[in-house]
Amino acid sequence: MTATALTYSEDQAEAHDRITAMLRSAGVDLDEGLLTPPREGKQSVMAVVGKAGSGKTLLLAALYRALEDAGVEVVSGDYEGRRRRDRRTLAILAPTNKAASVLRMRGVPATTIHRILYTPVYDPEYEKIAEWLAGNGDKPEIEGLTEQALDRAHAFFQTNKSIPGALAAAGLRGSDFITGWKRREEPLDIGFIDEASMLDAKQFEDLQEIFPTLLLFGDPAQLPPVKGEGGGMVFDTLAAPSKLELHRIHRQDADNPILDLAHTLGDPEVGFEDFERLVEQTAQRDERVKWAQRVEVDLMARSPVLVWRNATRIRLINAFRAVHGAPETELLEGEPLICDGIELPLKHRKKRLDLEARGLIKGAQVIYLGLGRKPGFSRLHVIGAEDPQLSAASIIKVEKPDEEEPFIPFAANLGATFLHGAAVTIHKAQGSQWPDVQVFAPDIYAAARMGRNEAGQPLWKRLAYVAITRAEERLHWVVRNRLSKPTGPLRVDDLRTAPVPLTLEGETEG
Image (cartoon, rainbow, N blue to C red; front, side, top):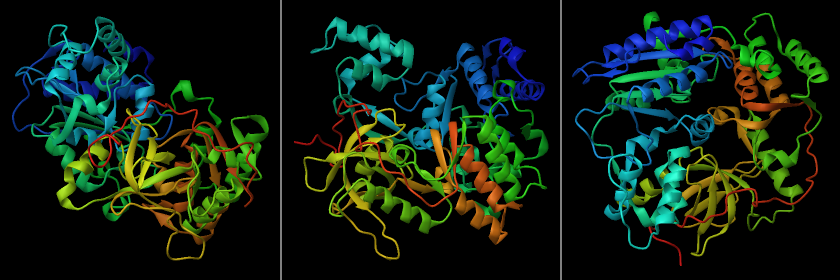
C-alpha cells in the first residue's frame, strides 16, 4: 500500500488495492514502480461509484500521482510527444470543460474526452520547444525568442504542465504553433474518466477503442444521460467485482451542510415538504445554505439558475435581460451563453475541429465579449477551457416566452450556435460546479407533484440531488418566483483578457 493510503477511509483503501491489482495485470506495478509492455488484446474496465463527498476525486488524484511516480506518461491533450516503444500512457478525461477544469484546479491534468480524440499538429519549429519542455530534447534556439522567453516557458511548465500555456508565457499565440488537428490514430493505455454517469453507450464504446484499461468514476444518484438506454448509466452493467462502491462520506467533507442535504435525499421516507424543512433549518444555522426569497440576478452572469422546466428557463433568461436593459437587437458584453453545437457542412470538418478542440463543444458555458471584426463573428470566453478566448462565427438564439421561434439578435450564415445561459436545465448542469448555485425550488416541487420516477428513483429527488451538488461553496434554495435588481452592469474585466485570435475561418481576424 502506498503512503497515500494513510489518508484513505476503509472503502477507499479497498478500492485502491483492487485498482492496483488491475493495473498490475495491465503491466503497471505501483507497489514496485515497474512498467512492462501491455498485453495485446487484454481489456479491463472497472468503475468507482459513490455519492458526492464519498472520496472519488481524492482517490483519482492519488492514483494519478502514483502512476506518474511510476513513470507512466500523462497525455493531456494539448501536446503529445514522439511515441516511444516502451512508454506507458495515462489520460484523465471528463465529459465537459467545466468538469475537467475542476480537476485541474486540484492539480490533476484533466482534459475533455473530445480533446483526446483529436490531437494538435504543431509547427515543426515550435515543436522543438514542446519536446524540450516534455523532457525529450535539449533546449532549442528559436528565431525571434530570447533565452528569457524560453526560461519563462520552462518555469510555467514546471508548475502547470501545459504546453500551450508555457508557449503563451513565452509570448506566442495558439495560431503561431498549432497548425491544425487530426483524429487520434494510435490507442493509449490507461484512461480515467470522471463524471462517468454522463457517458452514453456510444461514448463508452469509443473510449474502449482507445483505452484497453478504463477506470470510470461516477455518481449513481445523478440523472442518467439523455441518450442512455433504459435510463441507466454505463457502469450499471458491470459485474460486482468490477464495480467498487464508496459508501462513507470522507471526513474532509463530513461537516459540509450541502452534502448532508444531498445524502438526506437517499432516505425513502423523506418527502418534498420534509426536505424543504431541512433546507430551511440548515439555512438558519449555516451560512453555506441560503433560504432565498428571490433569484439573485448578479449571480446569473457566471453561474446559471438551475431549473427543471424549459418554460421556467426561458422566463428567467428574459427577466435577466430585462433588468439589465438589454436591447432585443443585440447582446450586452458579459451576457452568458451556452454552446448548442456547431452548424457547418462536412467540407468544413477542419474548422469544426479547431473550435471543438478549443473547448467550444455542445454544452460549453461561454461569456459574450463583444462583436468580432468580421460580420457575424463574436468574441467569446469559454469557461473552464485551457485556452479560453477565441472568435467564432456565431448564431445566437434568445428564446421568448410563449413563442415557438427564438429571437436572433444577429447571426452568421454558418457557425457555432448558442442559447442564452443565465438559466439552464438541471440535466445540462451535470458535470459542472460553481461556487454559488441557485436552485429554483418551485420546479423541483412541480416534479414532486407529478410523481414521476427516473431510473428507479423519484425524479424530484434526482433533480434536487444533482442541482444542490453543483454548489462548491454556497447553495441558494430559491422558493419564490422573484428576481432581484442588479447591483451594477454586466462585466468582463474579471476574465482573462489576452486575445486568442483563432476563428472559424482558421485564420486571425483583421
